[in-house]
Image (cartoon, rainbow, N blue to C red):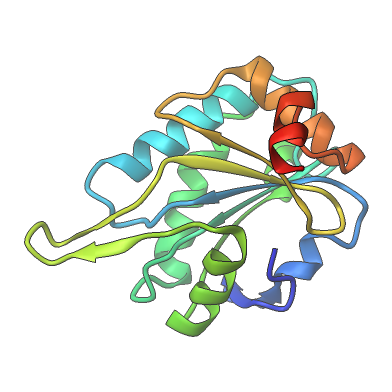
Length: 179
């Protein structure tokens, strides 16, 4: 993770990604742009469905950071999308562990490039082409797992959070492939 990437939180405060890694907790990164006509809303809804029922509470056990990769979006839109996303948690304190971030093109390039999240503007469709993925990071910023798809299994997501908390990279097969 590009820990020094400066981004703007949904409340207008400027933060560096390192601020999410200074409490010894894993972080779940979701890259989604807020004006997306379809896929990003699905990704956010499916991520919430997988994360909300887990026995872990954002802010207490892990963090959730949603980063828009559209440099034209700002904190007002981010705050609106965050409000919808946090409404899926029974525990109201979970909102304290969920931040939505935006930034300029340089900051976004730092944040997306470091984790290997690639996207491209498709002029004919007037939208970004991008993957659907949850990215799990250890407290030190090491990426431990990518979970791709249009829906996310809660069991897989729970295991990924635990692995990230321990700083371990994937399962045995993933470790062997990386070796």
